[in-house]
Length: 101
Image (tube, rainbow, N blue to C red):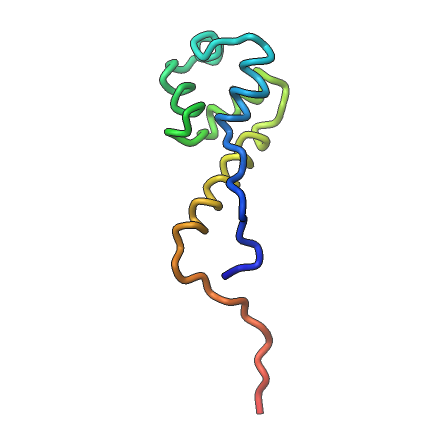
């Protein structure tokens, strides 16, 4: 098992969106969806962790809230890596320099 394997699930992009942006700004999912030009189902599925944040949506969220697209994509990547690590059964050990005779 990798020493880098996470013990705690990262905060999801949807949770960040909901807790750090929608609630403090008193925005509904519908209002945000209309503002960035996506169906409200897209925002709802992100908030409820039913879908990933796409690059296009990350860019739209970045411009809307004054953060970088990387902010949203890095949160998504952290979550994807966490789930991948949880599902992998055989994680290889680190390769070290071999000792030849």
